[in-house]
Image (tube, rainbow, N blue to C red; front, top):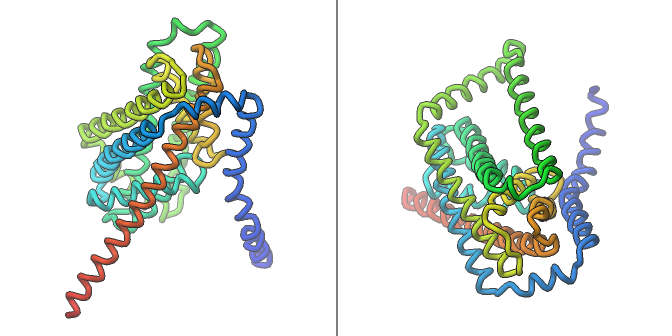
Length: 334
């Protein structure tokens, strides 16, 4: 690219930035519109009206409590990677990432915002990057393990036609993992720049540090399983209040897969995609799609409210930290 074209490219990027930012919101609106277009909207609204306000508040409190366990898991993984964050710093970054998921596409957008804040306070930026990646991998692993456990419990309730999409999904995941592993093996490291090779060396050292602590990784995975199981139980409580009565094993199978689908960066925070996926996954078990979408929207309201509470905590903690730093500086000057 010539220098003459660079200003044009920058101008084009500035003009298209608002459009790119609005695309995830448009995706969520489109998916929700289609859901209400093809489902009986009045039935969805009637199911939501059955939900007692006190139960919703209790579920929100349980959701935030589960995320406090998530903070402990996040700090444990970062500590094993050598990031060097205190619990207060980790909680501030964690809930900031939870808040950022409202404005960044898919579930991963909040992770990037969380990592960016953590790198400002951490002792090792490489530790933050690898620890954040490991933390998200552990979350996905926990969801996959729960889905596998549910799949082992429900095979007798699915006919051959209902089983086929899940078999294809498992095959696609296996092929994608094999392609990524092959690409990582065949990449010629010598052709990379010196700066990139130095970063890879740092990542390798941090990875080795984490590999020497299997008990920490196992503990973090256990905490992740507890968090995700808590979310499933809270979702079931909302679903029962909305009139949706489905066996726990069916939820154990469908809920983790629906949450994994929210990682696809086509909607804002997975809104819409998660509800559509959950309705499709629970349909073979006799769950009415309208009631499933209603339960999913009730859970989505909890997620959004929890993110707002996380943002409020982040701002309060940041202001408190700034006042504390100014007080220390004034004491030194005095």
